[in-house]
Image (cartoon, rainbow, N blue to C red; front, top):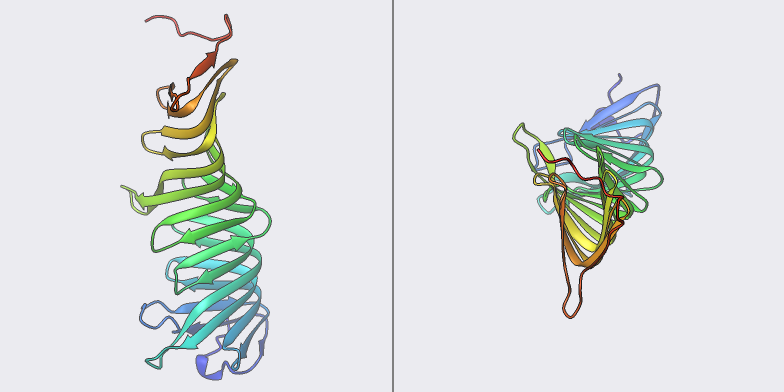
Length: 266
């Protein structure tokens, strides 16, 4: 692969494959590497590099691939130059040791350590979950959490958590890397485990204990049986649900006789 050195980047590059490495992340110790099969253009007045054609950008252990990438940079008070914002369009894929995300476009704000992806077929795949969303996926790198907005859903085996907004909070895993430790859900919440469903307005799910707490007009569906209350605690691992009434309210249940399967006594 041909390499365009920073000293000669101020011209339009167009060849089968071009690449360059810019130490524009001053102070981080991690340069921003960009490769493209089409062209790389430098626009000095706009302070931007534009790469086109199967673009691959790498910074540390994060790899971004797209058809077009624009890397905006600035000169800080100390005179050092650094990339502050990256915009990617067309078949965007972002890979890290902790997961892979896909979308149509992405904006990477390096100052805020924030990545926002939009467009069709938004998806995040981790070692445990597949997360989809309609409107956007956000990744807050410094604080180790992600936000899925718009008809969001996180699926793991026969378990799923859906809501208008899902927040996934990650923690260090015993085997290294990050793992989703807690899911927070807001708006039209639905937790499914096999044939059982719990719905409400807001809640959270602890992925280790497999306990979900849902509040706000809660409905529990267990086969043909239905229960309702203000809040519910659902122990998915043990198959237990506990409903709590709101102030001045009652919990209720409708149980269909002869329809519920009961395990034989041991």
